[in-house]
Image (cartoon, rainbow, N blue to C red; front, side, top):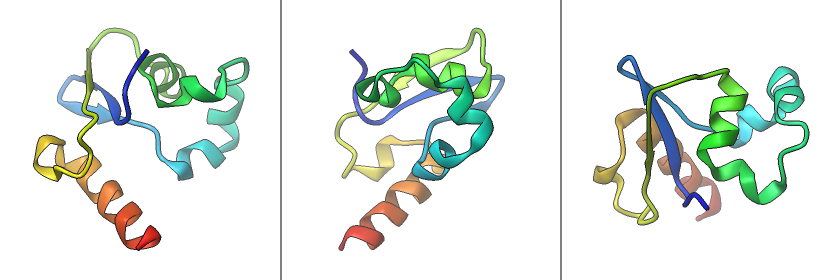
Length: 84
């Protein structure tokens, strides 16, 4: 089982799912059949963005923003601001 927060890195690009992504019609269609608890994992990320190959990453200490790529840090900051 993957941990929150998971991402896939391929060709220098970072792919991860956000709440906004999960509202996208195309992504929702690609994720049909995924269980809710699987949406945080690499399989869902790969399905959502049609990724083959690359490297899986995950970090469960999400309050340590320095552990994440910059593409993910901003979404975690937004989450913190929204829920504070």
